[in-house]
Image (spheres, rainbow, N blue to C red):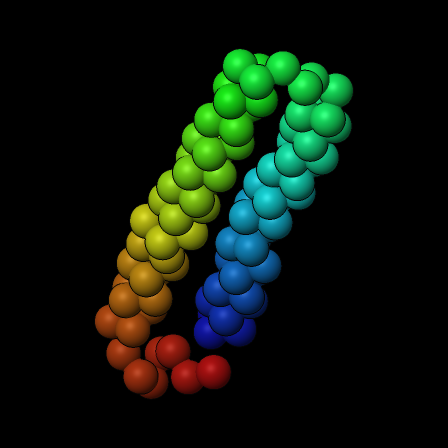
Length: 94
């Protein structure tokens, strides 16, 4: 039973890092797309619009990464760790 809890915690650690990597990969693809889009248009109003889109894109990217990393994943991870810490020592020796 103890080995089962340790292995599930190990799998949860691997699953925890998959979403931020996927989000950063999608954001980098969008960044390449926006850079190519910005080179095509030289008009001042369109470049100002695209620069504001860049600003909001990076701002929202940081907010989404912060919420996913610290609020959603870390909160669930620490709840599961505290539940595991409440198990008596003679049951949960790894």
